[in-house]
Length: 439
Image (tube, rainbow, N blue to C red; front, top):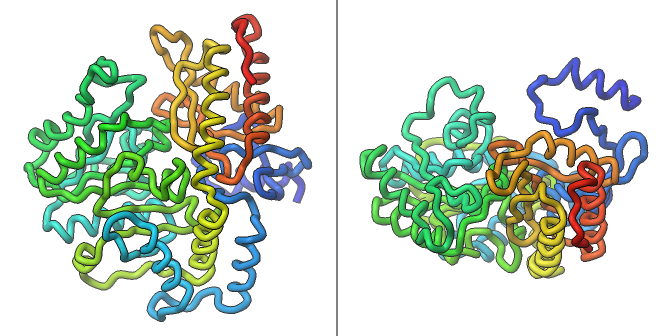
């Protein structure tokens, strides 16, 4: 099919609510490592990685070769029948998860992983109420949308999800309490106790949070935040669920899971996206005594199937063998400095945040008022596309640029991305460019 035929049939046969970034659809054709090509043959540096999914490069032959081999051997049977691939994956995950987390339940997506985690917490504690965070995103099922705290992602939710309440998140750039870190003494974390005391029975089943809020715009809490929150959760008898759908598998640098950067060991970890480098996957991981409470008949038809299991284990092993967690930290720091340089040069950038190879810039019309600049954000996406750079966006106001390239990119890739972004910003507002120079 031609590009035009693909676009026409996409509109004709797919739901119109499918999310897109560009004024004219970008029809993808093929990809290799950090690059992607569209149907017209134009080459792009992919700095969004399939929405934080391509961990080790598009069509990485070290992953795809093992997938092809497994497809020819056993593609699917049933989760009723044990097989070597899923056992090997679960064993590998048990070796790298923090604390005593050692048992896995595999599904097909982050939505299902989070749904499983909430079910599990409710069964284990015998309680029902769950605390999530404002600006958080947990998926697209009814329960996951109830956990989500973005009005744009809750349109199909007719009533609030029963048993779910939301506490303040640690959005330092837009502090909901009007305070400034560190003099604030992380008051947003202490709000959790007030929420439990005033909007729940005081006996919660769980608290769920992304270490860095993905769809929320890579909102990154201060170092003290999760230790304070963890203690409060435990004081009220709840389980701590770390949603690692976007932050897991070395993305934040040095550690396998984002929550480890805050020196907290969760009771349950959920993951998806980058675990299998583009193959659909979801996983819920916990301690044996918690897993034992998952009663009744439970099945995920395609969860942990042989092809997915092989892809996931191969991805973990590649990250481990090539020390990509260290690369995420080193190249991530280099990337961060480039973004900070852009901030010095361009007034449109109000904030730079993130960790490792999970970095964001927030656009504002004015740095004093911090008025969000969603139109300029959309224009920036288009200008970067013209220059062969793919990035993402997010945030409650649609004014945050999200970037999550493969973990095996190099500093030269960062230089290419920074140059494209600098040119895009200059094309948008040449008169506003200061005298400083970005790399």
